[in-house]
Every structure is written in C-alpha cells, then in structure tokens.
Image (tube, rainbow, N blue to C red; front, side, top):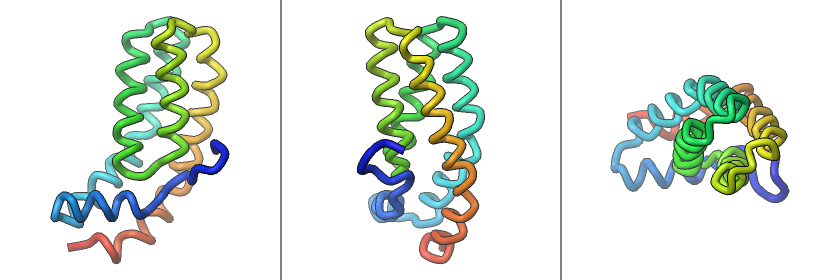
Length: 125
C-alpha cells in the first residue's frame, strides 16, 4: 500500500451513492469493480509484458478511474505511477510497478467480501 493512503475508503462510495441518488447502484458498481479486478490485473500485466503501451494505457486508465470512483486509493495511486511511466515509454521500468499494482489488487480482492458485507446494510435499497 502506498504511504498515507488507505486500501479502500468507504466514504467515497457513500459520496458516489449520494451523487447518483441511488445507493443500490453504487453498491452494484463497487461489487462489479471488485469482481473485475483480477481480469484488470491480468490485462495490465500482460500488456506491459508484451510491450504494448496502447493496451497498457487503456487498461491502466480504466482501473485508475474506476478505483477513484469507489475509493480504492492504493490502486488509484499505483495506477497513476504506471500511467506516468507508460506515457513516457518506460515499459521496462513499469514492470515492478505493475507487480506492485498487482499486489494492491490482490489485497482488494481478498478484502472485497468484507468490504461488501460491511457496506451492504448502508447501501441497499
């Protein structure tokens, strides 16, 4: 996890629910986000391994934006670092950062059921 930023901030998803005017939709978005994380991880790591900056950037930006929307700060921060490296054409240097992002994603996947269980009473209906 990056220094000073939480793996997940539940206040962000509560704010999203308020802005959407639909708690259930925000909860579903978070649930979908967590479900898609393993595929997003593979997509980013594969694109960087294959030296495909366009595919890497597409996957990184998608993860960064979604992470920001749900409050997954560590994944968002690590996506920003990767975005900068890929934008500068530093794919070789981005490999360790992609691995670190993968670890942050793995932590979110592990914590996901607990996050959803804690938020469901507040974001249902």
